[in-house]
Every structure is written in C-alpha cells, then in structure tokens.
Length: 261
Image 1 (cartoon, rainbow, N blue to C red):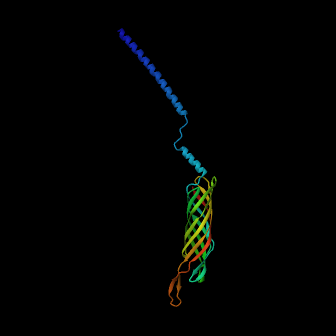
Image 2: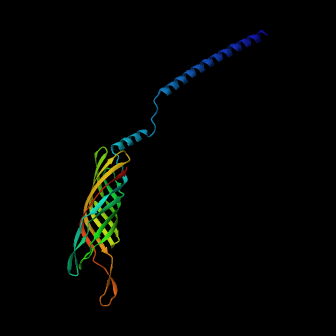
Image 3: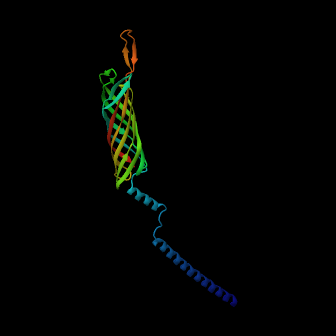
C-alpha cells in the first residue's frame, strides 16, 4: 500500500512539472506572436501594383495633354472671293466668272498624331446664298438667286507645337474639296489648296478650346442645268447645255470649337 501511495505522489509531481513547462512555453509563444503583430502594424503599407505607373502617366498628361488622337467640332464662317477664268471654245475666248460667296460652316475635325507631326481629316458642311450671273460665249445672262450647300473634306498634314503648358500652335497645309449642291446648277465642285493656323488651349487634360484661321487658293466650277430652247423655224423645243461657269479665287475661313482630348 505504501508503494502505491509513493507512485501516485511521484506521478503527480511529474504531471505538475509538465503542465508548468507547457504553460511557460505557451506564454513565450504568445509574446513572439504579439511582437510580430506589432511590427506588422508599424511597418509602412506595401505599394499597390501599377500605382507608380499610373502616377507617371498622370504627370505626363499634365505636361502634355494633347492626345495621340483627337476629335472635335467647330463652327465658323467660310467664303471665297469672286473667281475668273479664261475659256476657249469654238475658236473664241471668253472670261468665265463665279460670284463671291460666304456663309456658315460646320466641321468635325479628326486629328491623328498629337503633339508634333500629325494628320487631319475634317469633313465639313457649309451654306451660302449667292446671286449667279451666267457668263457664256453669247454674253452675260440675267442672274438668279442660288442656294449653295457644300459637302466637303479638308485633309492634310499638321504640325502642333507645344508653346507653353496648356497652349499649342498648329500649322498645316492640305486640300479642301467639296461637292456643291444647288438649285441653280446641275453640278458644282470646289477644289482649293488650304493652309490653316490654329491655337489649341487645354482647360483640363480632356477638353481643349480651339480657334482656327485658314487661307487658300483654288477653283470652283458650276455646270449649268440644260435650258429649253425653241427653234424659231420648226418650233421644236430642245435642251441646250450652257457653258459651265468656272473661276479661280482665294479662299478663307475662321472658326472656333472644342477638341477631345
């Protein structure tokens, strides 16, 4: 009986020692974990992937906001002076003439290239109302009022120069051509060489205000509608094609608008 009591007492001492050792080890482990957590909380946050690249892109746009491609809308006034052209027909030479005209112009410029060298495609629509005096080999015919609507396109290279932070100066040269619809002509066309000068001011990185002035030189041709003519002898009615009206003239236009971006 005494041996059993001694064995139980020894087992209790061993179990107590084991529990004390485990408790101490657990406390040490909790201290290590707490220290690691404190270091993790005090450490600076890791940078997000791509944030530095995005910051560089924003800074670059702030310095040079003009995009590689841009689209806009402009409204203004366009016109051309009186044109004259000497035409020879059936051994006779006469001076053909087209009247000066001016009116409202709407355009949708599309720029490719951004800062520096680029290219512009600019479809436009213009309106004019002129008094047309027909000049043929038979002499000057009475004039009539004509409404002209031009469906055209300007295209050509452009160089945008970055003057200061938000301002660009654009210089270009190209061809401005149009099909002209009218109640007084069977067909009319314009073909002009044009040199535009523009100023583009960015109010922010996405929107810019644009002012442009253009000059050029070229020609317009109006093909007259056939005229019914009665033969005085046979009294037969026939259509006679009159001589076309043509003239070389100077071109000008001025407009304001917006560009994105």
